[in-house]
Length: 493
Image (cartoon, rainbow, N blue to C red):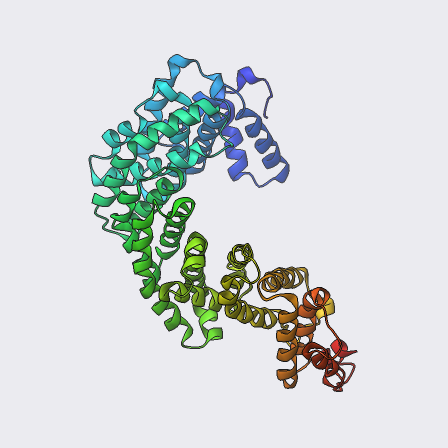
C-alpha cells in the first residue's frame, strides 16, 4: 500500500497511511503505516502536506495533530530544506493555523504549533527580527487570543535553550539579544493581564517562569514585581498554582545566588515572605508528621525546596550572621526537612549541608565558626541515624537498591558532620546515642552501627579515654537475645 518513492509522497498517500495508523486493527498494517509516515516526515514534501492537513476543516483531529507535529519536527531539524523566499509564507501560514486551534479541545495541536512558531522565529533570525512584536500585534489585542500569545511567548526563551533545535550559536545569540530587549514589554503585559480563570493565571505564571529562567531581569524590577509575593501566597495556600509558584521562587533565588549584594533588594523581599511560609510548614506538621506526609507531602516538599534554595543562596550570610534570628530560623526549617521520613524530601537539603560544611571547614579548626555550627551538625548526625533506621519488617541485608542508595546518601551527610564535628566528637555522639537508645530495639541499633561504619574508621581512640569507656560498654549492649527466625534475630545473628 505504501510506496517509498519520495516523489509520490503526496496527500493521496498520506491520508490512507494516517487512516491505517489511527484506525486499522491489524498490527502489521499499523506498523507499516507508522514506518512509512516516519520516513515521509523526513521528506521535503511533508512541508506542503502538513500545511494542507492543518488547513483542512474536515480532516480528523488525529491527522491534524500529526501535521502539527510534523511541522514542528521539520522546523527543528529540516529548516535547511526551505528556500529563503518561502520563510515569510510559512510564518504567515503557521500564524493562521495556531489562531484556528486555540479552543481547549485543540490544546495539543496548539502547543505543537506554539513550539514550531518559537523555533521558526529562531531559525528565521534576521528575516523575522520583530517576532515578539508580531505576536503582540497579532494575539495581544483581544482576550480571546491571549492564551495563544502567552503560549508562544513562553516557548521563545525555552526553545532558544533547547539544544535539540538544529540551529547555530549565532542565531541563538541573536535571538537571546532580541528576547532581552523584549523583556520589559513581556513582563509588563503579564503584570497587567486580568485572569478570569485559574487556567489563565497558570499560563501567566508559566510564561513568567520561562522568562525569569532564561533572560536577565534587573534586580530592582524583580524586587518591585508583585508576582513574587503572589507566588508565596500560592505556595502558602496550596492548590494547582503552587508548584509553578515554587519553581518561580526557586529560579529567582538561583538568579540572586551569584551576587547577593547586587540582588539585595530581591533577597529582602523573599526574606520578608518566609515567616508566612514557616507558619504554614509548622501548621501542616502540627497534625503529626506521618499524617502530614500522607496527605500533604507535595506541599511540604515545595516549602522544603524554597527553604533549601534560600539556604544555598545565602551561604555567605549564613557564615557571617549565623546568630541572626532569620538565619537560625532558615537552618531550623531545613534541619526539620532533613529529618522527615520521606526519602524525597529529606534528600533535598543534602547538597546544602555539604556546601555549608565545606564553607565552615575552610577556617582553621580553632576558628569560632566551627563552634558556632557544631550544634547544628550534632543534630544532623542524630537525624542521620534516624533516617538510616529501617522499619522492623525490613532486612538490611536484603534492602532494595532504592533504600540502599538512600542510606548511602545519608552516609554522605554523616561524612559532612565529621568534617565539622571532628571524627572523635562524632564517634562519641553516636556511641552515647546508641547507649541511650538501646531499649528501642535491634533496628535502631543496626542504624547506629551502619553510621559507625563511616564514623569509626576516621576516629582515633586511646586507652582510658571517654571513647574507650563507651566502647567497653558495647558487648553487653548487643547481647540481647532474639529468635533467629525473626527479622530482629537475623540482624543480630
